[in-house]
Length: 52
Image 1: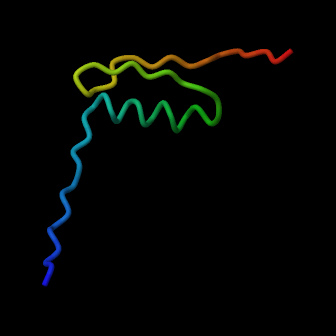
Image 2 (image 1 turned 60 degrees about the vertical axis):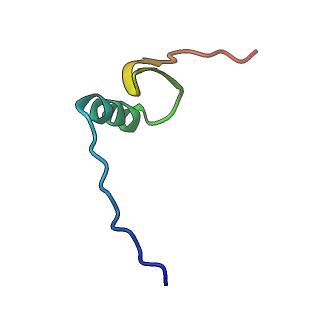
């Protein structure tokens, strides 16, 4: 019956690795990620939000 296809391992680019490091160091909060051609090009951390 159904043979399982071998799993392909994803190759992570340097930009993706840098994004993962930023996310892990963020702890909590919000981040906006700008993407071009399927790759992260810029990340913005939301520094301050005041709820009234």
